[in-house]
Amino acid sequence: MFTPKPEHKFTFGLWTVGNIGRDPFGSPVRQALSPVELVHLLNEVGAYGVNFHDNDLVPIDATPAERDQIVRDFKKALDETGLVVPMATTNLFADPAFKDGAFTSNDSRVRAYALQKTMNAIDLGVELGAKVYVFWGGREGVETDAGKDPVESLKRFREALNFLCEYVRDQGYDLTFALEAKPNEPRGDIYLPTTGAMLGFIATLDHSEMVGVNPEVAHEHMAGLNFTHAVAQAWDAGKLFHIDLNDQAPGRYDQDLRFGSSNLKSAFFLVKFMEDVGYEGMRHFDAHAYRTEDYEGVKDFARGCMRTYLILKQKAAEWNADKDIQALVAEINADLGANDLLGSYSTDRASAIKGAQLDRTVLGERGLAYEKLDQLTIELLMGVR
Image (cartoon, rainbow, N blue to C red; front, top):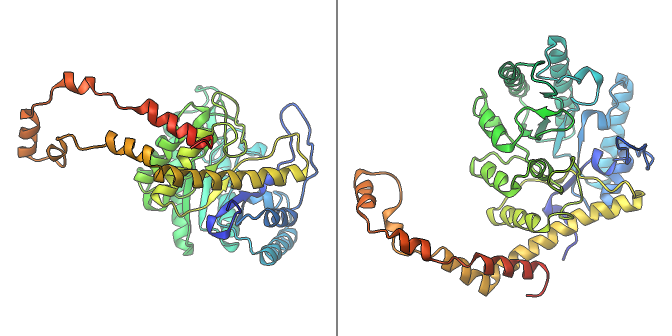
């Protein structure tokens, strides 16, 4: 029941299962595996697809001949395993050239290099089958506001995305963009720090229809926000083009924990929302195994992400079918006599609402039974219903 299948569309990045356990206080604990080896690892655990930054696959200093050989080997591994590449992205944060941003750098040469690097990476992603291209601006921010004008920086970011949208159109690529928000780390403050901020920014682009969001659990939780609400806003706007699943303890550094391992109830409501609305995109796990693990542990981590999602999907179905829970939901949402007053504005409707007998004392006295509903949810998750 909880075995991943292609229709579940579970994907991982090369950088996730390929994480070698380095952190700011310690050197690597796992030997690096090649992209080909990582494709076979993902096939072994039952993943559907593999995503990558350009330099996860092709080193930044590779020669053209080396690049072509790497891509040939990668394609062969995809053919052998049946894995697909649904999404790709560009690393615009690791190289020292991007220490003060890529698209928002004060140095026009850096901005030009960022466009060059991204166009080449888009070509590579499309060559390998990607339909979504993600932009995470990890260096697009500041440590001190003395260094950058935030309005000018947003203009530069907008100019870059407008340029790249036109490039995709000019090339005839079947590709959409997804912007990924994060409040901080590695910069002290990153521009457009939340999914809501990204949605507002997208509306200012020349081809906003091509651009959506790629919200990530950890990034919203770092800011103490409700991730399911961010996803719902993106869905409502028709902009949920991709999603990054992991977990995070609020107030910590970006942990990229195994999905569902820290905030199980939050993960449950997220999965329930995605399944209830019929989200058909990839379920991408942007997480990595604990530093304590060898590659058997990395496989356990990857299997755990997918298994937890499927368990929570089953729990969501049980929640929707639970008679006591649904009776409470029906009671909470019952029409108590005012639905006919509501709807789109008209002069008559405004007059009817203004003249309605709505007793605020009675309204304030009604108990809503949310405590009972939440407890039933907890019991269902704990397996005692």
